[in-house]
Image (cartoon, rainbow, N blue to C red):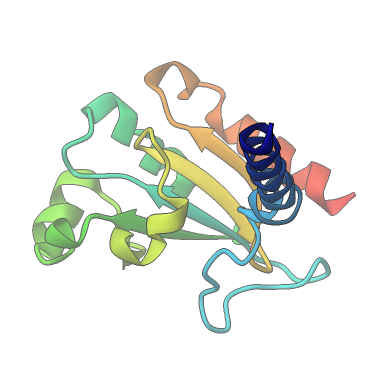
Length: 155
């Protein structure tokens, strides 16, 4: 009987720990996204940060999304987040992908690194507002999708 009470007590402690973790820690995983110094703005500001996680080894049709991102209004600031090994060959990366904006090391964003690359993450004030996995099928609608997220944020 004593063993059963000890096992029951241990199980209750594990259950309590998992409940505390779920309610306090896991729900805030998208808060405190790394801020770019002086680039995060308030709601009345004019810039919304977009982080494109990609690699020069992604398929060409997936990387065509970069051209669409260049057409976005100036209210968006776009950052490329690439593996550190590719960041060392910056010239080759720019030549292959056409991405010539600010490039950041993916190792600095390890906690937020998506499972599927390329992925676009919309961030403001350290909070993620949307995550869009980039697929060739989205190419025709990508501009509208990003703008609809942006306008819904402004409301």
